Image (cartoon, rainbow, N blue to C red):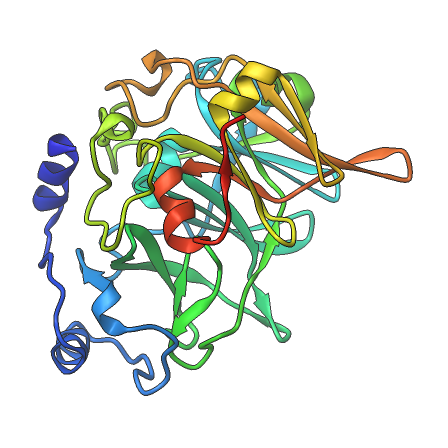
Length: 327
């Protein structure tokens, strides 16, 4: 994680601190926030100040090219695969890890596509709340090592993992999660030859060919995690969290060993050919981790189920009553 920390510093870290609530609010007001800090659903001491707002710039006018014209991505590169109303789009993590948020319109639905490298959480939200379309940006804050987003309309702060507003006018409101998948570029191409793939608006804006999180997924501990680590497994063990009610969690190693797991009406299949995003200096050279497809049968058809392939510490922090199955 040392390389990542150096990159954070180069990018302009303001502070890595946990302060009393009054000091936190003073800090945030000095940053220019117009958030209603009188409305909150969390302890402000849980929020870490890392960067200033928008220092990790969201993608607000995403550019795409047809799948057949993309020649730079390697087959093993992970992408966020999203299909809405027949509109298939891939969001490569080598782009998303530098921006973390993309505000888009897919299949006529306003969505926010997100990726938090520290949690390896790729999550897509419907960004319409009570008929109001929101635009999201990065706050520069972390809570339990997870991205805290904000909406530009009210400057409320939202937890990326849950999609729930933590602070501000929308406190307690939860965004609707939309099924998506972390999948290899090769699999996306094969399934959606008529689809589109996200490309950088400015290829020189970031070093998109390099990974700023080399070796992170084998670190001993997560970056700036407050709270206990999971017991009985490595904090960075990859876990498939299925967003059923109640949620279900399985180690990725278990899914890989069995090939297919059926539980609670849900089918989970392991898929080979996907590199770890958080391993090698060039993502395509990362070690094999594979991925999963999670579906349920409805009227004889397979329907995608919302899930994430994340780390054990993330499930422990946000879903503490969910048991992670290993066999």
